[in-house]
Image (cartoon, rainbow, N blue to C red; front, side, top):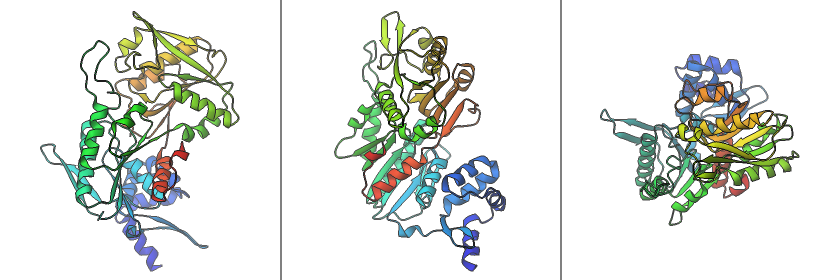
Length: 408
């Protein structure tokens, strides 16, 4: 009884309201706990902040189920999170049964980023979880300084986990009209290498060629989201589905194959844009830039395939303004499509993208929590799935020298 009382005291401290919320919900699994914290507003947030500085483990007896702080010194790895997506990082730690490492990641008054770690990392494998999404420059600088600080603190190995790899769309040094452009995707890889990263894990990179920007033995794991998304799709009662590509031909074929293995046969369809220069394959980097919705709308869509009275799955990796995916959905609805789902990984959702999605022919857009969604980006048409189990299993396999490729 003494051990339980002290465990609860260390875990929750003064967050009495958060504890009452947690007790009332009675979650039975780590994922249920994370969802509970996300749903209960300020009370859940108070409880969640407490868990970020006090680890928890699940202890079960015949009489009761209790949550107690663990001793992370028993682990030969550490997990730290930047300010990019601390909720996702905490969920990953909970799934692994450990705590996030203690750190202060803040700013001086002039805006300089300041990093301080309070847990020893000497001789340990350290994982840094940090998407470089909005604000990309701040999040990238945090990631670089965290890695360099950990390297100087004698970490044995450093793995950077980027649920979203920012600057990934800047892939060509030459523009469409021959002008010079930044090759930022490669520059980020060079910076990560310079500060001392040993391994990189990302989720659904914008292009596979990004892995080639990392040299000198840096291993890059590009996690695929098709399998984590599959159970949700199979529960939607899809009728004679068609998988349609918006810049994702290879992944569309992979999704079709996975659906077939699950007992659901589907077909493929292809979208093309027609502009002043003739047809442009939407699967190439020559398609209209989604960041410029006026450029997208100035092109006429053409579709190859049959969607009449069939459910449609539109695949794309990033939704920013939503102009490409919504224009594609509207065009397919005009062709007689039944339900239309947009499957994406990273929901940047800038500008008036949510409004555009609500007004479009889309029935639902499915994305992952690789990027935290801020207030004002809620919509009944947006369904967010968690990527935490996939990343947690990846870390587990790395620690146990298992195969990560088998996950995707």
